[in-house]
Each structure stands twice: as C-alpha cells, then as structure tokens.
Image (tube, rainbow, N blue to C red; front, side):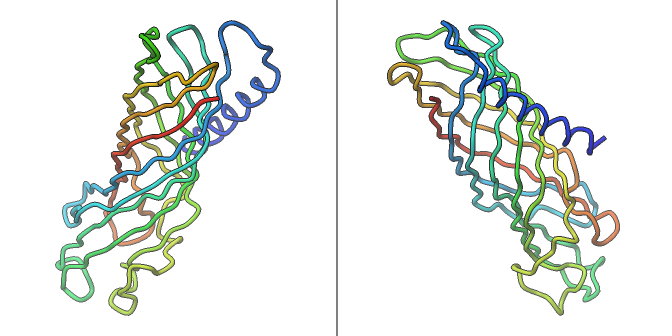
Length: 224
C-alpha cells in the first residue's frame, strides 16, 4: 500500500509538469508553478505506553508549488520540496537498558510530494482566499538523532540512525491562506499549514516504539 502511494505521488507530479510544458496560453491559466519556503514548529507524538513526546523543534522546508486549475475556484495542488522534520521523545526508564529515562532527539530530512484539493474564492480586490486538504507523502533521505538501540554507548543526538527510520512517511495536510496579485499572472501566496502524521516514522528500535511526525508552519511563496 505504501509503495503504491509513493509511486502514484511521483507519477502525478511529473505528469503535471508535462502538462505545463504543453499548455497553451488561455484565459484560465490551467498550470501554475511557484516556489516557496516554509518555517515551522515540529514535534513527535507517540501512541506507545512507554514513549512520550518531549517538546518541539524548529523545522523548515523549501521547494516548488504546482497548481492544476480544474475550474475558476478549484485546483489540484501538488509540488515537491525538501523538508527538515523530527522532534523529541522521552523513553520510560522501565524499558531501557540503563533503567533510566532517555531523552531522544531526531533530525529527519525528507523529499515530500503533497497531493491536495485546493478551493479558492473569487478575487476580491487583489486577494483570493483558499483552503487546501489532502495528503503529504515523504521519502526519508537523512536521519540523525539519539541511537536508542545503542544507548548509553551512543548518547549524542547527531548519530546517523538511518537504519532506525522508516523510509516512507504519510501525513494529513491542511492549509488555509491567501494569494495577493502583484500584476499579470504573478501572485504572492501565504498560508498556515498543519501536518498530522499517519505512520510510525521509527522502524527498527525497541518493540512498540511508536512516533508520528507532526508540524505547524507558515508557507511563503510566489506563483508565476
């Protein structure tokens, strides 16, 4: 199931790029391409009895935005970005080798491809408001943090732990924002977003060691 979602996400994104290359100029601009940056607050939430969230971190992402307009007020929204996620967890000492609580920190990097439906108001002055709802697929490309498997011999938070992190992540994505036209087909885009992880991002540490990656941030971008 996860493999199918990841393949479909990649195929949809490159199909949209192909449409953009072939699209003639019309009154309704069907394909819109933009760039963005997105500072965020990120954290991990656990469903395990012996693992708890232990605070938040600052995250960041940057990349491309792609809208395929289905009508004047509805669009298919996707893109591709590099995202820095992670968080902090506390492992109960009853389940550790040292019988002491472990404060684990994770710094994870993903290539992400969102798949969303975007709903937009008519233009009011120079502004259009929008909401987006969909999914965010992520492919892990870097993982550093506390090596819980080998604690306390590796107590730092910058160990390479790629083997302990699941290669794929999937999250619910919700965005609310506005676009401000600055002339022609160019507009500035601002939105608040919330990302709620569906999958356990920890793959191979202690049994029932579960953590979901969440985030709350601000997208700042421009469409051309």
